[in-house]
Length: 311
Image (cartoon, rainbow, N blue to C red; front, side, top):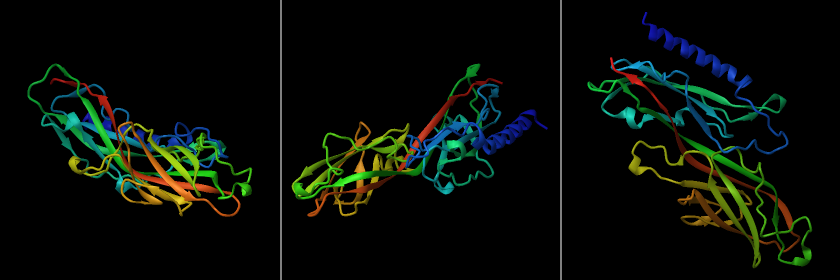
């Protein structure tokens, strides 16, 4: 049996063991169990499986395997049939022959969760991308191309504030536990669920018979907010759907239309501003939970240099 093939099988088996055992070692870290969310600014983490491909000992006209590891570092589940993982850039040109695997299925990736001993469990899966063969007839003794793999997937950020003041139209009925400071950013360390896009600022300002709420939404993770479609020209970029789930009787000015749900577009600095208003109450001011969610598609890539030797 071909030695390279035996080595490939051994790597696959060892990688499987790493996936099974990962929840008990490297896939855990300590977490504050009192927090609403675990937090963090990642969705999926994308990395190459060790020696797939090897960094060296690859030869012209000989195939080598390509596999990546997906790990869900955020707090939203990713369905297996919604993730698009593909080889991009240099390895897709005419000098490379790509052979697809006979089958490449992964399981649904569960969100990060709080486990035993205040640690975080991360779910992961290996994606087999098949083989690549460098077929160019002329080459230097050592060709060193970058292998790039892209993953695109839908994700959601959940947001919650425990105390959000709804003011009264009469200052005489104000509750001292429900006061508005327009200079204060209400977002705390664990207001957002773990995700690459987050609400990074919320400020309140009293206006006539209402409270004005200004939200700032930011892309914090490495990658792009972009629709997962095959045709690059038809991709919607930087589009985020915002839902204000509490209070629902709120009016926000979206890119198109107004209400408690709509679309915002990230600017070149990877931020978007959303201004909303909520009517004040005629009785006593009170605190409520402010809850929102952000829906978007996220794309990220990973690269490594591969050395291909002339045969």
